[in-house]
Length: 166
Image (cartoon, rainbow, N blue to C red; front, side):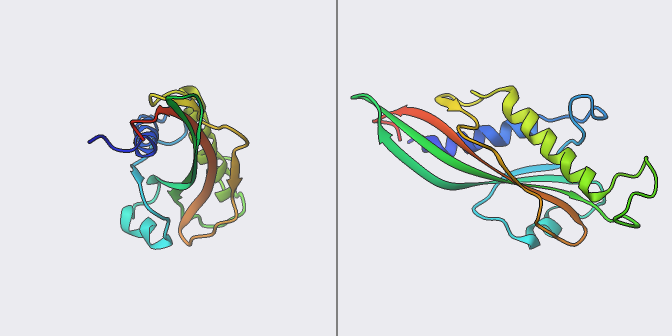
């Protein structure tokens, strides 16, 4: 039996984000070292996933999900996606010493830019997806994990499927 459509949506996002290739910031700043679908985010996952400075990970997890009847044979659904974006970061200082050394704020903003650019470049990366970001996209930059530049991005993916194939 096929996986749920929600699981297929998450797998599509993992595949889409895995295709990011850094080009010095023209399109993307960082190539993710690892993109994974997870059940929840733990700070310990960061240290266990990658240890080298400069390594980038995206941990993508499902949030709330809702389904409603569309037409007689179609269902409409929404899936909250929570992406933890992290780059190993151990600066000499949090203050900008020179223009060539990005601060944690700059690194976090680059992570968010890369994720959003890729997310919105191919909205229908998975069959049935109607919108990759149905409503607003929320970015939380308040998460602090020692040795990491971290942001959390939340968005709702809307999709449809036949009633026989949830």
